[in-house]
Length: 263
Image 1 (tube, rainbow, N blue to C red):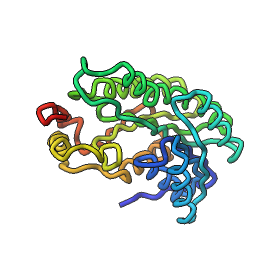
Image 2: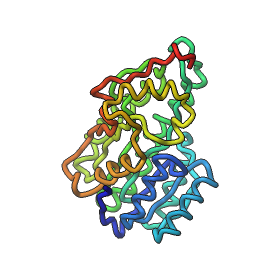
Image 3: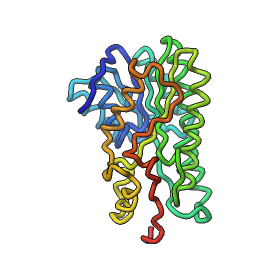
């Protein structure tokens, strides 16, 4: 069941909206009558999502944006504000998984890339988005962290460490912004049925699900519902939280050790 919201006259920006959770989040905002800025580094994918939203009767426009490049982020957010007159909501969702493997096998190049796309981007995006929201008198930001940002996992040190950083950055920034009318929270998905994990070998996916008490993958729509709630007035007293939407992964302990499976 999808809960509906009325975001008429609101502007929502979603990063990494060309696929996966970002795509579904953008569509959910549009169904709730927000005007949606679909942003992604993949132009074709982003424009395809805009067409899907428009075909369904929603309002959206694509903006090319590389979240790891602060100049691109600044220019992209400025373009959104110029086009739509302001910004009310942001779902900072773009991310990559990085390299699988034991800690001593991780390359510094892969680590640097994960830091740029998954962590620095959150800093860049919030610094660009918050001034625009202040001009509207407030707003709401949801940063995508991960269940791996709340617990430990085997073979995911760079990704998990960076997602812990997203949780921390969210809390510290939320504390400063709350009195200014901007609520900032993080969402921590467990294993979700997206292209992000589509290439996992079946034995690895089965192993992952042994640490997920509900016994199945989550669906992107379930993440989008949580994002919309965090942006809604229904979450008006929710500040700086890290909301687990994970099928119980965090309470069950993520079963991520898969080196015995040759992966």
